[in-house]
Image: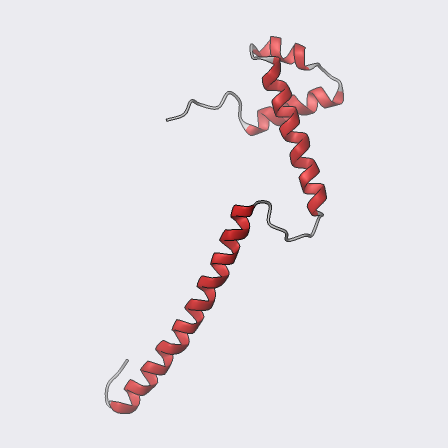
Amino acid sequence: MGRKPFKSPDEKLAIVLSVLRGETTQTDIARRLEMSQTTAAKWQKQFLEGGREALARGENAKTPTSKREAELESRVEELSTALGEAAVELGAWRRRGAALYPGSRS
């Protein structure tokens, strides 16, 4: 079991934005919150990288954000196709069964 996160994502966002606006420095925030300056710098880097990646993808782009996401989308498509084919086949079996046994209910 991992340790409890130091701050929530919303708290981290507020801290990073405060530093980016120039309201405080990484050193000041680290001292005030009793954490390392490295942690504050890491949060800022993560925030800026995430923003850069979002801009690179574009507003309406449907490009997967990761290789794993692309694999999962491909798998969902495969399973959806298989499910559709199975539904058609089941319908055909039911129609054949109804033709063989006209008095039965399926």
